[in-house]
Amino acid sequence: MPKKRAPYYWDRGGYYFLKWVPKRYRTVDPRQSVVISLHTKDELEAAKKAAAVEKQVQANWDGLLAGQSNDARSA
Image 1 (cartoon, rainbow, N blue to C red):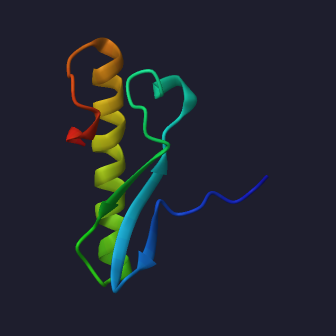
Image 2: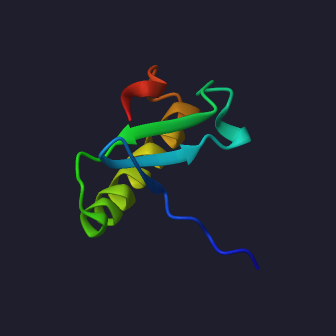
């Protein structure tokens, strides 16, 4: 079974959250991926922040599907 990649990466002096938009959410979020700065240079802090951001992004997508929000970029 392939190993799951961390939802963050290092670039331009800091860590960023990266999540590809699943196909089932493409009707409410046309982006291919979500990239958000985690505003940290520390990998342990990035891991914690990425987990929190991932929950927010998922909740936003679920809300969009349920018709609770109009803005896919609010995550």
